[in-house]
Amino acid sequence: MDVASEIVLRLADPVARASVLTADALLAIGSVVYELDPALVTDPVTATFDRMDLAVSLDPRASAMAQFRRTGEPVPWEVAASWETGQAPPAAADAVWTGAVVVRTAVLDDTIVDVATRQSGVDGPVALDATLRMSPPGQDPDPVPVSLPVLVAFLAAGADTSPRDLLRATPAARLGAARYGVAAVPAGAPARRFDRVVCWVVPDTTFDDPGWPGARTDTTPEQRRADRLRAARSWLAGQGVAVITTTEPT
Image (cartoon, rainbow, N blue to C red; front, side, top):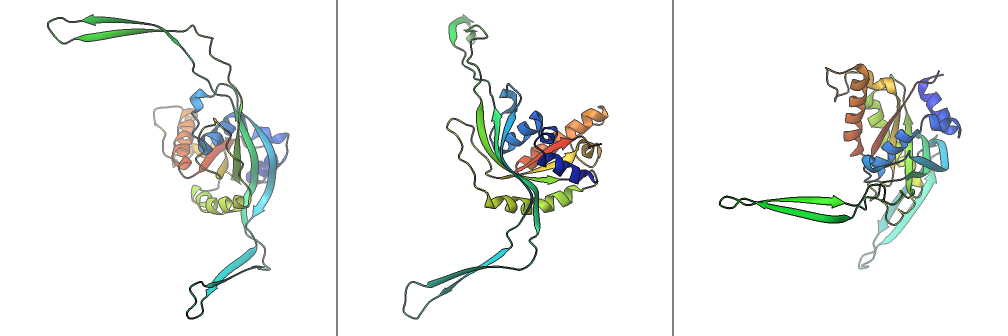
């Protein structure tokens, strides 16, 4: 069985799914969907799964709309129609997940309890030094879990799948997710960047390829792999694309 197929099967199985959608992977997805600072996330990210649909295709129906206007009538007549094409719908996404990522972020609620100032300089420029004394550590409120709705279309790839092929498949995957409704963002949650995102799931060895930019030459192979992944996530996030890696199934 090819690697991409095994990834899809692991996404489909509720038990095996955690081997693909790890806490780090969920954080990577949430950071693309929302204006979420990973540095403020205090606990491992978890998820809820309302649906995980497989082999999601594009809508097989075609539609058309026409306008007719009689001479002298200001308002045109509109006619709309849709019909089945009779052809097999093209594939869009390997899977579509509707649900939420659950995050806990640090709440910085330190209180300034003392400010000490000192002025130096008499004849020359005046310099002011200030010392702030904050409330003792450990008094911040415990992080509260926040459920952030997500709608994710997955594209599973093997190590031999080219970035060009994934980029070409991304618009269709996004269209495949268009038929799903998007849940509202809860009050107090980070701002949502994208209603629907596409997530590439690739083997971690993908970023051993030096064709991916972002790695320094004076580091270890593991660090170069991590640097390439970080760079890819940075520019793909602006396209509404998340990237997660997984070890190749054995």
